Length: 234
Ligand code: DX5
Ligand code: ZN
Image (cartoon, rainbow, N blue to C red; front, top):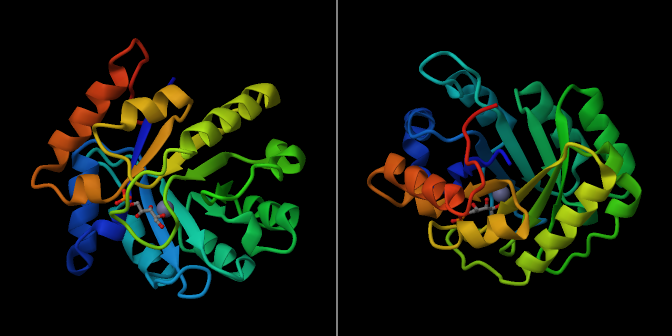
């Protein structure tokens, strides 16, 4: 299992976003998680495609390797904004199926623009739509908090949903990443991995600390405990 850690810049210092990206990348993070909120689908407002394109040149390791930008759209409507983010340098784009009328069409539109496509599921949202579209997905994102804010507590029922999503991915035989978003900390990341997740969004757990590298190393140590291989960029 290759694990990925994706810091959510929702909890970063917005006055220093470029530097914050450098710090989390230097700390060994794998993806940059970019939370887009519209004050309509969720009761908060963050950033749009212009900020994404401004940050794109900063999403690189010191050695010049590109670090994927993982856009999580908490918006309604989705389609036009998804394409704007594809043009702004997003590598992966996830949206909430309950925010669109035609889930399959939105997935295809994202992929046609050269991005990987993901579906994000709120805590009370069933996974049933996966019966019909899992073969077209690159990513499943299980929300373990209600979307809209960083710093909330992990909702335990997400663990059952992660197990269910992992079963569906195994049955599909496809290479689909399983990302979990909300309330991930050093002390629960292992449980979330054991339920079947391979990609972990962490906002306040990383940006709230003085030393990002220490938190990321502690998360990786938890992930490597128990015999699975915790790993870095691929
Ligand atoms: C919530 C966002 C999350 C959030 C995670 O709507 O999608 O990405 O920022 O933040 P923490 O890790 O603080 O729960
Ligand atoms: Zn998110």
